[in-house]
Image 1 (cartoon, rainbow, N blue to C red):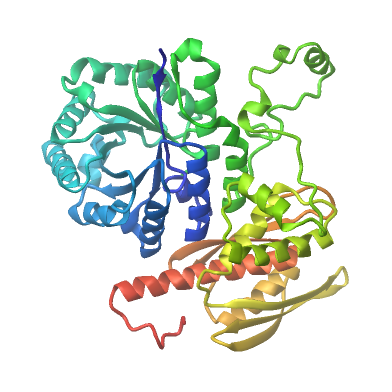
Image 2 (cartoon, helix red, strand yellow):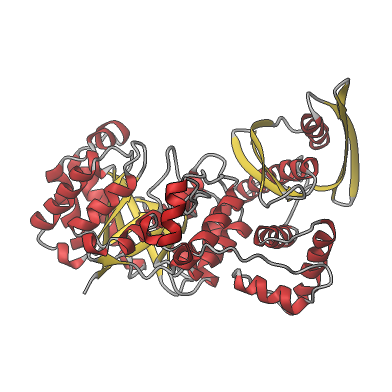
Length: 520
């Protein structure tokens, strides 16, 4: 009988740390629901002490999501661990995940301590965590650059202290598959109490070997793999969840292991993450790329006609790839719309359905076809408008041409009062952003900006993503519309609101009076 590998998804924590990939609480809740629908074993919902916003998001996910274990990350510090427990304690199955760096560069240069001192910190952290929570995971950060004998001691000591899962991260993507295999094998041979814990791995993709390293660890006996949807994550990203899951399922002959992941939700989840973060999946990406199951060469097409197994080792249906499209129109009823939305993972209260249906009809009146991506946008807009906002975008007008300076007029509302400005720019979006910046009166820097089509055809929705810096902080905003100028403006305002609300939460937590402050 094949082993069952635990899939630990960290898209909401490590994935969100990718520059520009930050998600607000509404987006995180939407993704958490989809991960639960996908039957993920463990969802790492965030890093509760990192910000009030992250704490609230982890708490909200812990309170609502049932099925998966809900984990929060914490450094090996008492205040981190206690704050983490405050957030995850509401979960049906909570987990505290605590970590400390164990490589020489971390021990000596980062912490300025000895190996013995760091080992004691790890043990103390696990003991505190286990006094609060029954399910505790410990990670030896930068384990693959840690002296092997010391790593053995850390693993043994933290298991003895009560850790039920011990993670061996390749934090900087330094390992090779054979090194990973040898390391995990060494631990199984030399840690006497290793049978009392699940050994996990968390691999980064700096050298493009994160999936190979994760699979090598499974081959050596690891029982949990930490990964993200689309391989999202810091720097070059993390091991890709969909690649690991489908490799285990497709090559059972090699690994004698499988997962309980509902693979038919892979495509839907991949597209949702892409939409929420603005990170486009490359066409040749394994499993979820647009070309993953496409065949253009004549030889390949002929082979597929004869027998699809000639050039496909997986069925597209197994990962949820179908050609079916929503054919509802403006005269379609609410029941058909609700059924499709529920199939996409949305649960809509009766009192919310009227507003959702109005949005659907308004979009259907302008488009020839409504795609699932359109429905995701409609639902995201409906949720976003219920979240507290500082500034509301009322009107955007822009004028541009080859022989004129682009100009824009923007009207925004705050606390019942309206503010209008006109501005010029290098292009229509730049002009709109200049007008918005004048209205909010903040020193803002646009760090990144992109627009992409998220549906098909000339009437496709355009999604704008913008990263904004202000006062040492960064936030990303996203919005979609048939008008890319409108989408760009709304994305900019969303990013500004995120920055202002985050700043308000920080100052409130520090005891400042923000009722008459400049921000609000």
